Length: 78
Image (cartoon, rainbow, N blue to C red; front, side, top):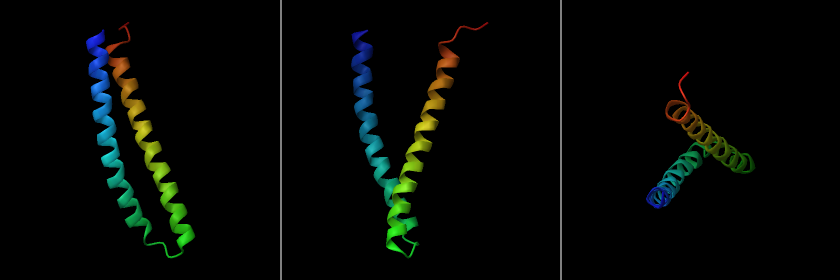
């Protein structure tokens, strides 16, 4: 069990680094797309709102994938 946990910690750290890099790329894309909004206050709000939407979509996708994996491998077949 210790080996599994140690491996999990390594994967978690790697995933965090990858997420940080991917997030920065997506945030730059959001800033670029929101740059078309003329009024600065709307542009700033749009950047934050689009960032929240992007993070929510990613979280939902990860949750669904985890649920499908659990259903496929850990639930007993009837």
